[in-house]
Image (cartoon, one colour):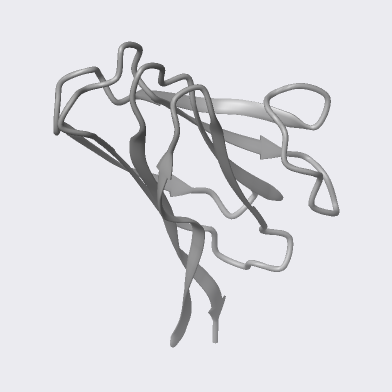
Length: 128
């Protein structure tokens, strides 16, 4: 069985400013096999006053909803904190089940300093 895999960028490496939100989302409805999500948060040379939190959210929708925090469409399935230690990297890998319809990654909550964030998915596009 041959597998078709596709690299997906939800959030390219970017600075999440103090008090800001950075989000990336992906319509998984056409994806046959789910995938593997990686997230990364790196504190700067001065750590944030309050840590950056990465929320992994899903939506049970046939079409991709607008980017938003948890609420009517988006439901949080996991949250990870990046701590407040200067220069500290936090890296997490999460399998994404094939039953997931819509996926969103949200970085939020850091105060005092920016935090560099990113999220990528190795998508199992098809099994032939």
